[in-house]
Image 1 (cartoon, rainbow, N blue to C red):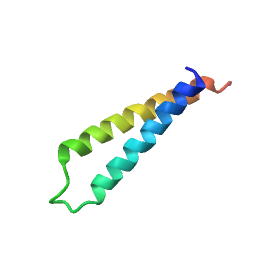
Image 2 (cartoon, rainbow, N blue to C red):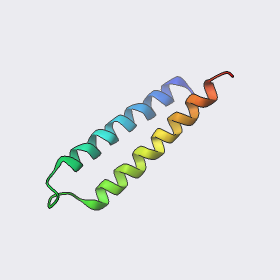
Image 3 (cartoon, rainbow, N blue to C red):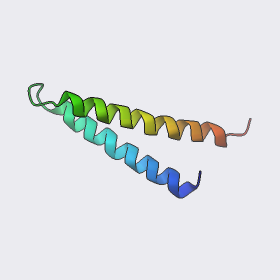
Length: 60
């Protein structure tokens, strides 16, 4: 993957994790469970892509 594409994925992951943490800071009555699950899933997927890319670029 190109550096620009990985940069975009990293920025998207950061934005998603910030949005999720903001949702979790709300009082429990105001939290949206579906939104939390969606943000966690998307953030985990993007983080996994970044981690796999990192390990592929390491020379052993």
